[in-house]
Length: 192
Ligand SMILES: [Zn+2]
Image 1 (cartoon, rainbow, N blue to C red):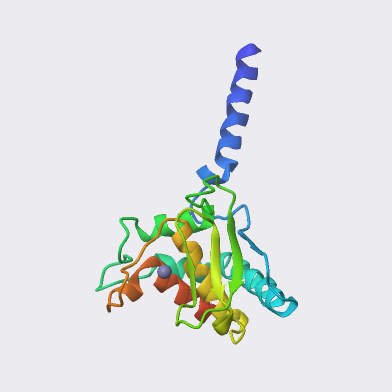
Image 2 (tube, helix red, strand yellow):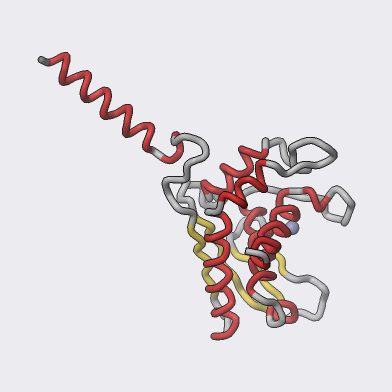
């Protein structure tokens, strides 16, 4: 009797373990990915674009098309991104887990904060490694549609997950995780 109970408990714990997202069966996404983009000084119009952009990011990251795009991504005939040791599957999992270097719990959420500034330079936005905040240049963002914001914010957020790219332009830089997937989500946003 006792043994039967013990077995049942072990079985129940095993099922719980399997049902935990971090250990879940690869391919299934039991918890939907969400995007939490906060902004400090955005105007009503700028804010509306960010709200729309975060909805689109959620739809894209939860889609099979995005997952397949990441898994199938290749550079010079190899299924690999530039400037990362991770496999494509590990890149996808890192995005889906949403564990930022500065906010490392696995919450399946994009956590990012935006502040608008007005700059005359050609800088679209900038950030620092020690904050989850990204400063966005109104010169560009006011003319951006939601899909350009999607691409830009996603690029910056990928830095917050620890992905890097070359400082200067090179033909391979477009194959880094921030550039490649920034472009990918922007394209998917424009062609849903
Ligand atoms: Zn970058």
